[in-house]
Amino acid sequence: MKKEKVFKVKNYPHFDNKKNNYRKYIPYVINKESVEKHPFFPFIHYTDKRRKYNGEECQYKEREIYYASHIDRYIYQYYSYLLNERYNRKVKKLGLNRAVIAYRTNLHKSNIHFAHEVMMYLKEQKEAFLIVSDFSNFFDTLNHEYLKQNIKYVLEKDRIPIDLYKVLKNVCKFSYIKLEDILKEINIEEKELSKINRFFEIKEFRKIKKKLLNNNKEDFGIAQGSPISAVLSNIYMIKFDSLINNLITSHNGIYRRYSDDIFIAIPNIEQGKQICNQIRILVNSIPNLKLSEKKTKYFVKCNAGIAELNKENLEIINKNAKINYLGFSYDGNKIKIIEKTVSKFYTKMYARVKTINRYSNKLNRNIGRRKIYKQYSHLGANTKKIKEGNFLSYVNRAKNIFKEDAEFDRQVRNAWKNLNKRLDNVNSKRGE
Image (cartoon, rainbow, N blue to C red; front, side, top):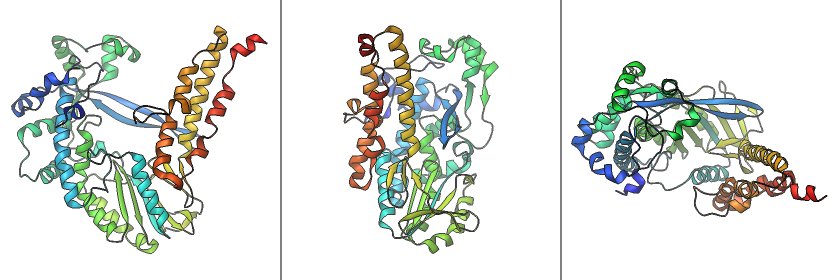
């Protein structure tokens, strides 16, 4: 076990003290008897709202996030590691290693690689029938009993071990306290959280717990945001993935699932249309699994183009459509980074330039140049580390993987010119 990869330190305040030296707690975390008796803290809950742009319209996507106390997080991380090891072995046996691509610990690939594989498959096909969809309220609806059955299936055991059962119980029948209620109780704003080490001493916490505690009393739903929720979602889907993958590959097609997003391609349009009903039957066979009507779309590739189909009769409704997949788009001819992603890069850059210009003119000297060049130009893109660099680093990585099959340079070729064009040169103005 490579502990550095299993345990990740976080510095947010919670109901226990911050525990930055994870090595100190490893003996406790990996001890089954300790975990069986461990008193888990409630999760802290907040609603994550993220802006999504659909053309000119701005929409918000909400996710209910639950984050664990520091010692609990180490336990969830360790048991996530254990389950991932068994899950990875099982999907290899089932021939699903390339089909399920989210939250995997053994693939060592990025979304760029996954998108490249799908796009190259589409480019090779003279014709294809395509389905793009996702599942509604995925984490919030996972059935507890069905999840337990699948865990036993993955572990190849008749019973779930007591220590693991204790962990599962706290993720399924989880308790939580809302962050907004905590902030009201201690009378601070969210931006001041970095100053706090811990919410409440233990005696005070017990009083607050009686007052503010909430519980998931349903027989479905897991705490999204915990370190173990990702592998549990994969385990929940393992039998579905196997059934769908067998169906699609029997028609020489490909099936890919990334968390709650699915992509299906079959290199025969008529065969693709015929198996749509079989796919619906398989979806309905899994407890609480439901495809999003709004986001389910059907396409065909033919005559070097992509056409979108009507959901009811599968007739063409748009001859000039695009397939969007993991940040890339394909129109049957060109592969690009999704336009709204590039647009978001420029919008953020211009907003940052506006702020820098305002302060530069106010102070009558150029400021912030080094930082903005690092964030939005090729000067900050020259790094081999994936977690460093900027958006142009991402473009460079994509270009190296897709090679001549895409024209990403064209989408950002004016970044340097536009950045310098909009930056006010206060020194030159002063000298005039």
